[in-house]
Every structure is written in C-alpha cells, then in structure tokens.
Image (tube, rainbow, N blue to C red; front, side, top):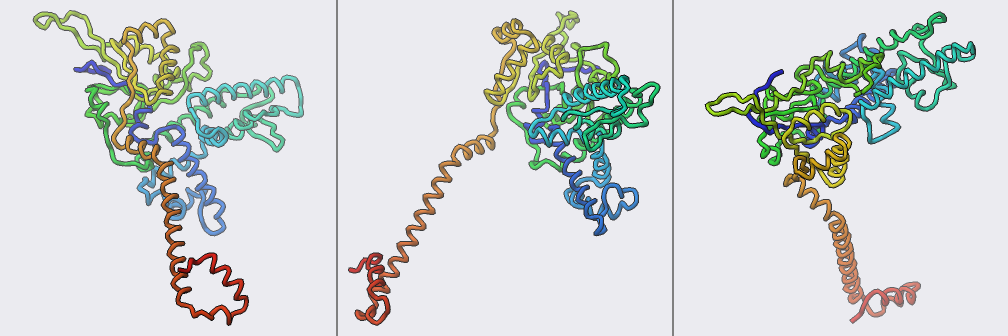
Length: 459
C-alpha cells in the first residue's frame, strides 16, 4: 500500500484513542455484551415451559424467538440479523473461555495474552494425556486429573475435551485412538474454526453493535488532537474514529486490519519462528492471511527536493504522535520500526501514573541507553493529554462532592431545627390559650404539667 503523505505529522493510534472518544472497544466491553446475551439465552431456556424459546430453538421458530427473546435489543436499534448471528457465537469455545476467565478475574482481560495461554495449555494437557496413555494406566485412559486452570480450559473448549464429575479431563473420543493417540491436526482444525468465528463475532460487535451499545453517542473532537494537524494515521485499531479529524481512510494504515475491510487481526506475538504448530494464532500469520498493509518508511517520509525540484533521493523523516497506544510488547517489532524511522517522537499520556508507565515501556522497547539519549535530546518527548471543558467541570464537581454532601446535611439539620422551633411556638400559643384550671381536671396533671413546663417557655 503506497500513500503520498504531504505532512510529516503522523498520528499513531491505539485503543486508548477510541476510549478517549467514549467508544466501548475494550475486550472487556465485548465480553460484557456477550455475557449479557448468554444470560438472556439461559433465561429464555429456563422459561421454555411457558412457551419462551431458547437459542437452541432458533432454527425451528425465528419469529417466536425474535418476539420473546430479542425484542429488548431490537428496540434499542440493534440489527436483528446481527444480534441473532452474534448470539449464536456465545457458544464459541474461545468466547466461553473469555467469559469464564472474566468472571474469575474481574477488571482485566487481554485476548492476545489469553490466546497464547490457551494454545500453550491445550498442548500441555494433550501431552499429559498422551503420557498417561503411554504408561498404560487404564484408570484415566486418554484422561488426567486437572488443576483449576486446566478445568476452566476443558469446560470452555467442550468441542475438544470432556470433563467428569471428579474433574477428570478427557480428549473427545473422535479426536484420539489407541494406535496414534491424540489427532493434533484435528484438534488444531477445530481451534482454527473457533478462532475464525471469534474474529467474526468481534467484527460484528464493533461494526454493528458498539455504536448502539455506547452510552454517549454524540461525536466530538479534541482541540489538542486537531492542533497536531496530522494528514495521515497509522492505527492499531480496527475502527476509523480518526475520520472525525478530517483524515480519510486513503491516508490511514490499519496495521491489524479494519472493520471496513473485514480483515481484523487477532493473535499473539512470538519470537520463536521455528514453532509453527500454532502459527495460525500468531499475529504475523494472521496479517499475511488477511493481507494487512506492511509498514514501509517511504509511506511516511517526505522527499527532499533539490534546486529546480530535482529529487535528491533523500527523505525527511516524519514526527510520530503516539496517542492512546500502550506501547506494549505485543506490538514490539512494529513499534521499534516506527521509533527508528521517526525524526521525533511525541508520546501523549493521561496522568502521572500513565506517564511513568510509558517511560518504562520506551526503556523496554529501546533499551536503557537509547531511551535515555532520546529523552535527553528531546527526540522523544512526553505530552500530557489536555482535558476538555466538560472533563474539567466533572473533575471539579467530584472534588467538591464531599463538601456538597456535608453542606446538604447541614442544611437538612437546620431545616429540622426550624421545624422544631415552629412546633414549639405552636405549643406555646396553645398553652397560653388554656384556662388556668385546665390541668386540675385531668388525670396525671402534675406529670403533664412538669413535661410541658420543661418544654414550653411561659412568659
């Protein structure tokens, strides 16, 4: 992909850019939505005796399912076709694993890390099952007693494993035999199909569901980003939020594919080039299969012309503005390449914690010496992200909240005092109007007189 870039200011975007614009594009947002769909399906299944259809009845009666199980989502503007398709993917083995993992480890989920863990753990479990079988131990033929992590894996990947009441993990019978043991090619074929369905599901969520799912819908821009004056984008996101800043898709490179092209890339980075058994799940292989663009220095540099417009075959390298990118090692190779071809690097951060974390990431990427030299020479610079007027107002309100709460309590106490004073004055007026011999005709008059005398001030 060749791009003629008139500007030397390039925006390099990560998911933080989308989050900064209030999009629900975190992996956890996707899993949260899929979990809601799954619970909705279970609720429908449990109500089946009342005529409510579950997902398993989808092929038999779409209209009834639509009217009784999906109407809530359709009323919110979701595409019926999309909801049904995504709903069927709640049974996907990868999705099942992510949902189970999220339930155990709330607040953090990283698909790329977990995908690598899944492939590693599946291989370990299969090796243990093979070892058990090789020893001739009949008690757990093709099976092992799993630990907590292996049990979560086996329950989720039900197309590969079976699990009994004692947490014994077995390979599916059709995936193994006495002669050759486990058929790894068949296992990986299942994994690849489940992985492709996961990518399709995530694509559908981001493309058709997320725009309705987010709470703040109005599109807005940040003056600080506009002031960069970028004419081109290198984005690690699938979305095209950058278009809000007048940058067209022709001047953007989607490193990991895009929603528009339907070629989003998931996977993990791995330096072990000889390990090819699970190569399908590595990012570079997915990039090859989905034909995502390759980063090329000449796509971003500006030609330096000599006198008379003659090409000097020299190039002025661009200024790279990293916005919303974690600088994580999962994109290590591409990040190092961009750092090396940039004349200057500007890294935007949210707060001091984020600032320190990004400094650490730069040191991890470049090494201590190169990072220190780059920061000392101001080739690498860190810039705090400016807050919008709304964000500053919200922060001010949050800081003032304890005082406001105290003031509200104080006012309420004053109101109660005023009400008590009014009641006291009413009693005084009544008391003054009573005849002098009033208490002598009542029982317990002495006691009542004592109580009222303590409460009412008689002039």
